[in-house]
Length: 116
Image (cartoon, rainbow, N blue to C red):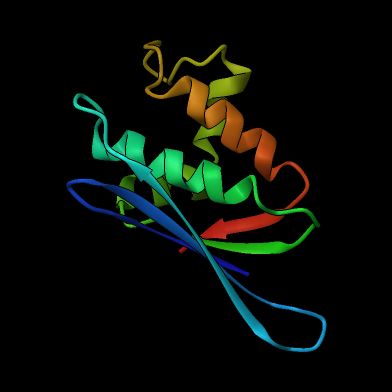
């Protein structure tokens, strides 16, 4: 299953693409609108979280974030490490978007995933 996210000035969209048991391709998109002070980073994480909330069964996910930063954070396991370190990074600073990352990690618990 693929989860692809795109960020725009006005918001962000995450799209799930998956095959059902009969081999039919399905697509589901969720969109979050940008609030005045939210960053693109926040919007993309929000869209990814909203899309993950729609998954009811265990699956293998290929998460395709638009931002290289998010892709690297997922692949390097940084959110899991931040959580273990009370949401602080290697430099001892609080990580950004702790609340969203916490929700995303909970959403991903039952899935196998990678970012590309």
